[in-house]
Length: 66
Image 1 (cartoon, rainbow, N blue to C red):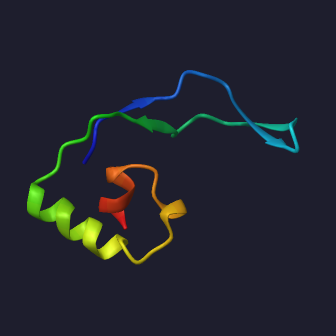
Image 2: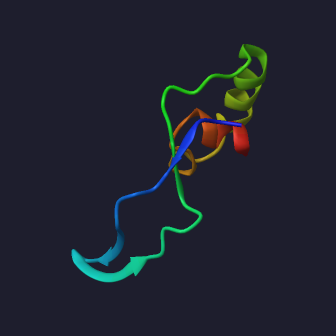
């Protein structure tokens, strides 16, 4: 579990700098920072993630969820 808030802003998808679509925000949440984890569990998750592409992870919550 991690702290998150429902999105209030309008979310847009763009391609080459041009807005293409409005993304429905129903069911979307923004993960909050900082996030808290038991040290042993997050360390193990970081060790597992170390060999994967850094582009897969945006924060500790994305590493823990993998």
